[in-house]
Image (cartoon, rainbow over all chains, first blue to last red; front, side, top):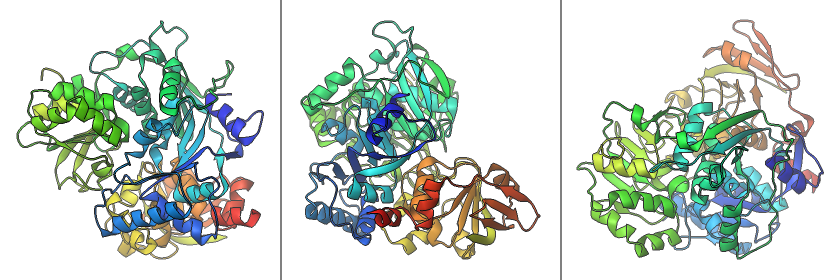
Length: 425
Length: 162
């Protein structure tokens, strides 16, 4: 069995599962945000469920339209707040404590290897970076999950990614996952797991071992953009150290794939070959390396942040490039750290000052502009480069605006240049 | 169970952001969501759609966000069934969980044009293009999923077993 299959089998109380099999399995965490939870709460109450299955295994994070962007958004948060209070939900994160959910839950130690997690947010696949089976669902699944602690799954087949080599300077996990989506397409992993581990030939310290937790979280985050059911990384010393730090050593069970695990496809990725990559509108699969871009693509806005790239290493990468520089005239640069903790670290490390002095705005955590919610909406005909995860039509604002996806490094170089750029442009 | 209506035809990768843009997600009101269904790729859809009509897409229909607001907006707008060459998996789950019938059939998705009269038989999985006479067979749902659909969605299916 693959890693994902082993976790699903364990949680379903079965010794073995096969791709395509329909199972019911026990959940370790059920997540929702301020957009999806109100619909789930309505379903929960309409169905007459009296109690939640476990108040410590539900996380409600008010991150999408917060701090409340309008009256309707405020009503949605109020609904979640009241539900959380009524059911004494332990992990309710409101303004002041909240962060972007997929930055926040790993940081709080709420997700760990071997867990089975569902979240009413498509980027719930992020936690696979830590060796969990974690997948996005809708509000009805969330409602039933909160009531019963169970969900139904179709056991996925898997694509195996064997990693070797190590990333070059100014190249990060974002470039790897954009490269992969360009390679297999936005439905290349439809209904399947994307399992990442080292190639058997990888040298010591290369392949998986060369990727930081932030690289892995970023890559697993975008598995959904290749149609994947989940992204999952093998557990190694880097994972164990991270989990030790975030959970204080709570027990967990790491699963490794069987040596005879069956994969629908095996793809070799040499990290040394990966170059800075940009996804052009309006699909994440429309990729080009920065070197392949010959025209000057002028930008109106740059956004650095999101559940994909709002972590401290992303802030560091951007700050080091923006230090002592100025954002190009006529360009707006919005920097959004993923959590309150990351916000504080940016202050302590001087990044916040670098951003403001460069002419960026430095914001409280929010999903905000990524989904065209607030805090940086585009007008008709405007063009943004963002470290976010989707560049669909109308994603960041007007249906005739454009979003290009890239790494924090490319975003920072581009913010200074005023057009999509690499170092020394 | 059967459905019949005119086809609203779309291409590959119809994403949840065009089905219901995030700027309208500050509400959970089904009617309000339906009023903006497909707005960013087909601004005339809401005015044109009639109760019972059928939506047809090609590959990877419903890709993107997990927002259940997307199948809700489609269902509430009056659409009786979505036919596509393939569905993104969260959309697939959500549609089943809320009781919006969906059918995966690449041949039908390709052969049906906008405004064709289409009928579907959910029990047999048969899709008929009444305008051209074309008939197509989609894979019927497994028992487990049929149970959810017959109960009228996941919440009812779970409640009936508690």
